[in-house]
Structures are given as structure tokens and as C-alpha cells.
Amino acid sequence: MKLSRFPRVRLGHGPTPLEPLPRLSEMLGGPNLYIKRDDCTGLATGGNKTRKLEYLMADALARKADTVITQGATQSNHARQTAAAAARLGLACHLLLEDRTGYTFDDYQHSGNVFLDHLHGASVSEVPGGTDMDAAMERLADSLRTQGRRPYVIPGGGSNPIGALGYVTCALELMAQANDSGLVIDHVVHATGSAGTQAGLVAGLQGARAGIAVLGIGVRAPKPAQEERVFNLASQTAELLGVPGAVERDSVVANCEYVGAGYGVPTPGMIEAVTLLARTEGILLDPVYSGKGMAGLIDLVRRGHFRKGQNIVFVHTGGAVGLFAYMHAFAKADAS
Image (cartoon, rainbow, N blue to C red; front, side, top):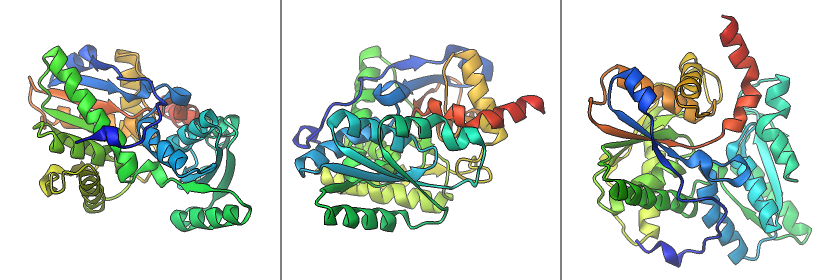
């Protein structure tokens, strides 16, 4: 896999740390838990989208774009990191934020990622839930073209084959860290949503024949739809890398039992996971992705899904700034 042939602009800090979680591991009494700190990528409080944006923004620059357009939920980590990357590279940025929760809480509407979107100078438009977001971005792009602008459209989550290259890079980075430290990784676990992170990890690990399984904890779609989305994107990414057929269907696994009432809607498990990591390891998760991902991992450990002695790596996809948008949810949990 020749990643060097793809344009890349360095936006993040790397390699991100790979750290043990000794207190959490001891408390749960199961496998040895580790955490890949992609919350430490550095761009506007960090997160997994920075890796994807290194390839996407490089492609935008190669195409002479002067504006980027992307979309996400109101408290989108991807939108915040795209706004920061655009500011750093001198590009205009237009964000379309979809109301996927119906929340009218002041903290949700104005703090966290939304505050940072505006701070980075992005043009922000709110659209109702159920909007065809891809069509909305194309309409905006057409409008900007009539004004003489050169827009580059980035899909939600940065999840296309170019963006997924960021997590092929992460897969290779993780393998190198494990080899350097003598760590034999049995399983990688992370939150999966728009599919680019899981697709990149699977394509990278399968393409390298690493023998490391990946489990995505779903935060939005049902299991069949999520797995199909990830498999299709992983296959396209492998083809882009010159290793077509490297991804087998049974290597794509998602557990979507921890979504709760819907995307971005808090669950008791998420509240517990965020609180537990903060109080045992001093690490902040986010309420939409890594919080639900860790809730799934904790529950699976408690149920004996992973064996004692196994080494499990949780990929922290960042987004802790989103906690400030969910103060109402944690306050309610504390009061109950």
C-alpha cells in the first residue's frame, strides 16, 4: 500500500499516544484495555476527522478549491475540525448542520462544537432533520460556482475513499506502535458512524494482513446498514490503494445495540462510560461517539465477550468539547 502517492497536508499531531488503561482494566476484571488517543490529534481540540482531512484538504488544494463545504449534525465534530482546517489553510468554509435530535437546550444550540464553528470563521446554516444533506451541499456548491467560487464538497464525516486513507494511516501507525512495544493486539474497538474510520482501519489492517479484528460500536444506523456501508467503503478504499479484494466481508463487524433512542441522544450507558473514564483514567470521552463506543466495550467486557488476558485497543475518536453541549444530560443524571 503506497500511501505516499496520495497528496497529504499535515494538520495533526502524530503519532497519537497508545496508552494502557490500568485502573479501568482492573475495575472491570476482564481483558487488558488500551486506548489509542486520537483525541490528541491537536486540531481545534483534536479528533479522528483530522486524519481524514489531511487527505481531503490536500485533494481540495490540488483541485485549486478556494472553499470547502461539508455537513453534519448540530454538534458535529467533523464540522468543527473542517472549519479549523479551512482556517489554517486560508480557505472559506460553509457548514450545513442538520437538526437530528430536536434539542432546544441552550447549551446544545450554542456551546461546544457550534461555538467553535463560528470562532473559526465558518459560515453556518441550520437545516431541519431529514434533509437530503448531499443534495443540499450540491445546491450550495452550484450557487457558489455562479459567484465565481471554486467549492470542494466533503461528505459527512469525511467518509469517502480519500478520507478513509487517514485511518489506513492510523492502522499502520498502530501496528508500528504495537511492534515497538511488544504488544500483541487481539481486537480494536471504536465508535462507528459515517463509516470512514472503520473502513480505513479494516482496509489498512486487512491490506497489511495484520490479523487484528476490528469491532465498530454503532452510534446511528442498524447493524445490516452499518456493516454494508463500512464494507463498501473499505472495499473502495482498498481498491484505491491498489489492493482490490483485500477486504473480506466477514472482517466488517458492527454492534449497534448501544445506539439508544437515536443518534446524539444520551443513554445511561454513555453517561456511565464518560463518567467512569473521567474518574478512573482522567480521560474525557464525547457524548455522541466515543462515549457510546466505550459504553459498548464496557458492557461487552462485563458480559465476557472478551477474554481475560486479551489485549483490546479502544480508538478514542475525540469530540470531548461536545460535553459542554450536553451539560443538561449529565445534570439530569446526577439529579436522578
